[in-house]
Length: 482
Image (cartoon, rainbow, N blue to C red; front, side):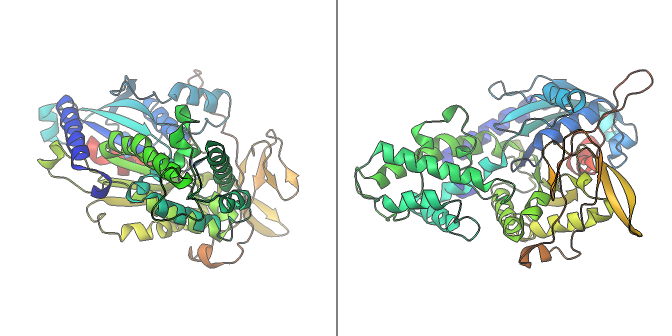
């Protein structure tokens, strides 16, 4: 990623790292990045991780917890005062009390969880290093998809964006935007009204790409979908042009678009990269593979492209004791397919094979040789139970839960109250089939409401149920709690 930063950027990054290392000398900290595309379950993952560690959840695959080496875990004030705090308490109230899923991530947020533990190492006990600060950084995956823009000029961005808009699965929903773009001469005199109209149409097209029936993932610029306090600013008011030229005429519409595109990179993309991505130690990327599978092969292929672009933005590698004082590298990356509870456990291996196939092009890339990459099929909060039903003499493995209000299977629309047994269908043995089949067999993946969390006889709320959250924690944190 050296091409994304200047020497000045790298100097500032090094100063930030030295400062952080100095403040964490006695009690080390790990910065864990949590990202994923829309509705992949980032807020749910963080809430469940913290809740299970604080409340001593059942996590047999997380060695420090399984061997009772975690003394306690608790929240502390986060180190970055300029970053919003992750709304953990609100999300837990939504999950447990209100039985609704938390709101989606729309900006960067942070939470510090401190873990006190008994070290398994005699050498570690000698130095009494039995406390770890886990700084969790939550950010939208859509913002990561902006980082490759730093390598591209406006003409390249325009040509790639127009080509995507004209692809088979996008051309219909992009028709209004493409019609407006075709009518706009790039070298015509700059016109604020025309530029804003085209930009608004482009944003509408990007938003429609995310709908369930398409479930497309490669949608830069990401901040167009999550503008925050920059909504309406010139830096977020541009669009690709169909008749772009390599050299814009001064005072033209293309010149205005180019200036705003460069402002977007300078004011939005670069600060995000320097202030957040370059400071991470470990990373988890959450994906909703089943939503893409429901939408068909084009959505699966688009998810693969998005995943490759997301992971190419990280700074992977394992530093040595000396270089780590001023240089942070992501040495562990976990790619997790969420909502495994929507499938019977007999299909979990197939879901994990799908994730393996999606990251195949990443793992063979140069630059990831010194970083450990793993995949897992998981559910940070398990919303279903498993059962078997008799269907005309055939035994079908089903999942049982309460589908969210408005979810449908065929002509049946669920009310959000009634518990239902759902046979989700079978994933193919060969994940390559998801990329080459003209039409996938209809899968019955529906969204379920969060589970009702049980209480003990003394009225104590138990931890949130999960599937392989402990396996994810073992990969991400196991070696830091030795």
